[in-house]
Length: 206
Image 1 (spheres, rainbow, N blue to C red):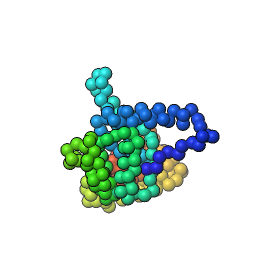
Image 2: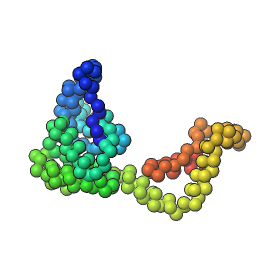
Image 3: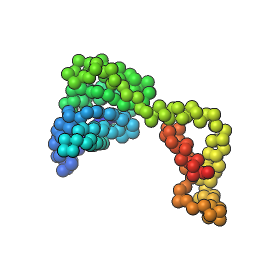
Image 4: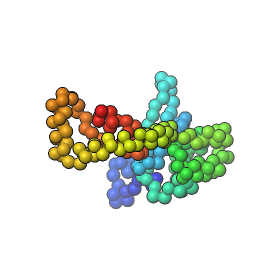
């Protein structure tokens, strides 16, 4: 989670000139935020959900401020989070939503120890770690799908065969037309890290 590179004085642009004002606005917004979920995935995002005083609804804003950190150790990630909390004048965390990776558990423990005496600490961090429901659902579905591994493998290989050649793709489309099957969707392969990526390709296949 490395901060985005900042231009040198000789490379100053209107965007870099506006950065201090943007950081000040970000700090003010996050200070009043109700939640502060962090998603360190690829070029990660910090999202804040704050009260919209005008109509009592909630508003959500997302900033792209981070790039993936090469060091995935829990303490390293925790220190990065600490750095940004100080930078944005955030003096308390209610929850962090992360999946069940061991490094994330270490991050939570590090932050629990580090911030337990901060004035914004809520319920002594009893609910600091909110586990990612999508990740849990992916694990559950992945375990259940093992019972039909053989069937999934056969369908996957059939789709891979069609997708591996433009000519095969065209032949497949021509058969669809002859059978009166109208669809603009192409075949797609599932990926292990996306919980619904097994469902969608097989709906198209069937």
